[in-house]
Amino acid sequence: MTTFEGTYNDNIQTLRMAIVIGRFNDLVTSKLLAGCQDCLRRHGMDVSTDGEQIDYVWVPGSFEISLVAKRLAASGQYDAVICLGAVIRGDTPHFDYVSSEVSKGIAAASFQTGVPVVFGILTTDTMQQALERAGIKNNLGWGYGLSALEMASLMKKLPTSAP
Image 1: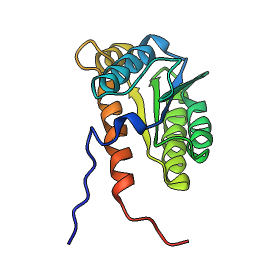
Image 2 (image 1 turned 90 degrees about the vertical axis):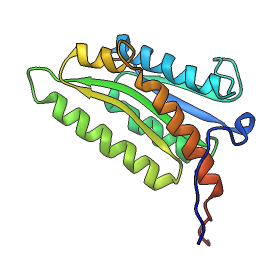
Image 3 (image 1 turned 135 degrees about the horizontal axis):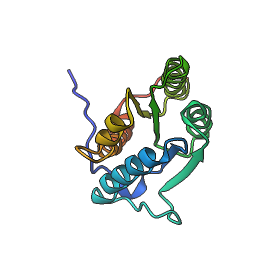
């Protein structure tokens, strides 16, 4: 019996990642991005915007994230794609539609490409809750970066399927 686990320091210098960030609610998403970058930097990745390890893609909002994530994952250029967004409940059903579709889209992007696509979309009832999760109390962006490192490492260790 074999046990497979990803780590946070396997071949960090050879990893390539993309981060897709929703511009809508950028007060929140920019903080998530900073937390994610802090994690990746502390684990040895070059997070500079002119570096070779991470590409940054800004999209209008969370709804658009999954399309871009799938395109990036399918390109074969990345070991993981991290999706960062914030959907905050309002007075209309818009929240339900957007949060549902971005969730399905990100899952589909990962399943269809075999590349880890990290779900870093906050879905909160209030802006205060979103800000708490983006740094006031705890920056979940850090955990999204850590998940990407672990999953990229794990996928390299798992057996591949026969053609």
